Picture (tube, rainbow, N blue to C red):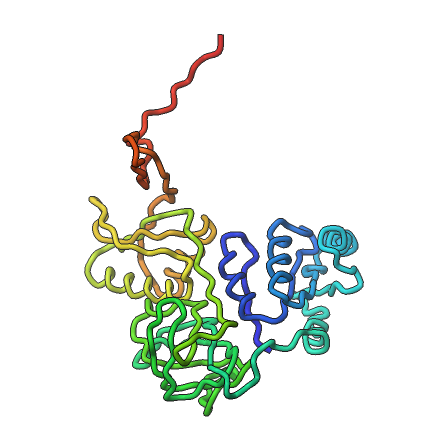
Length: 333
């Protein structure tokens, strides 16, 4: 079993989408205290529309405020789930965790892949990591054919070609093997030197024509923007730049562009899916890469009409108060 853990918050919808694309089953975790949330409904319909087997799980049943019968009725009314099919567990105490594994093995859906060894090879990237002396190593799910060293593969997104250097499985450490076959999850090392060349969710295929089963999920457009700058320039600027490249490799929903601030100097303008997404990204920079940074206040972009005659001139602005007069207040008689 290969498990992909994704946050349930709306800011991480892209993480959920690309994980669903690479999965056959979904564990729908519901808080036994909070009950069904709006994002629970969205995730459920997203998984069922892709044909995944959804296994509902109630977590935190050990808390005093937990009300499993009430939440099970919510699942029945809102999602049509039989209360008898809902698993009740406590991750903190380990209660009934073995029931989840047993249900996945006995009732779970098997990988829907092309098992013909002669079909064109193609796989989807689940995760990626930059390694010294090896470049970018990607964790993949093989969708069809077989992946072996020496093969030439292309990315659906931009058509770039790479040669496979090494393949292997995770058990849980990396272990090289001769090939990866349909349904297997493993790692692939290619001639990918810079982190920006490949992103999580990319699809690779062999041959001149891509498989009809291959599809690519475009990263969503950011809605919140903030600037990131090093506290001191020099070595810290290079360290922060390298950290951003590696972290954006793992989270392609972050939009990163260079910019220069009159007071803070050279830095980057980053786009996020929300405030929580921005805060998690900042924490990862500080904790995983030891970055010492300055994060500016978040803002949103506005699109406004400059007032010129057709053709209409549209501009994206970041400080609307500096371009538009304040709204006049007209007192009522």
